[in-house]
Image: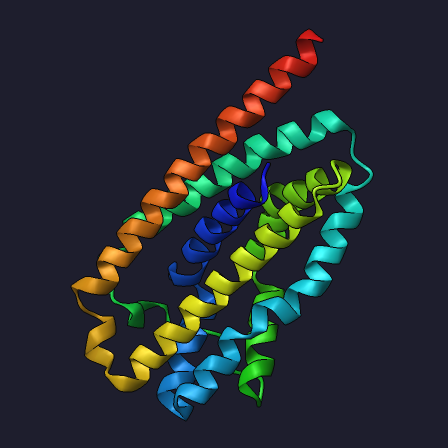
Length: 213
């Protein structure tokens, strides 16, 4: 995978994860409404911090797996991305306020975001089935620029989209509930569905090549 391809995959996944309704998005909305745009931005910055532990754990597990396991995980990852795309498409008609039932026990906005991210199963599933295999595959091929491009594209879009949503909520709640938000979700869902199909196809092709070798 070239750096540009890795960047494209990271951007697509990051954008999809960033605007899909879920616990962290709900917390971004809640904290922005309560404490202004700064509180929402702090929550949006939680994933890169919390995911350090998640990534380390997943990479350690993946490093011990045989090559064929990555192909199987790739298929699983593709199916998971397809599920995310379907879920995003299905919830595109909902208003963002439907996802505001987030964790409220932490005292600081950033702490709340880290807590929600660590308790959310999606980061673990993502790094075990999609992100981890991409990073390990790039490492085995010494494609370090591809790894950097993938991780950077993913987190810039993941964090950036939530920061943008926080700013939109702060400037006017009605903007977030309009047609633009639904179109953004539809676009994200289409990207995820396309990427999911590609991941499944690549995984099936790799498994077939290994079995016939």
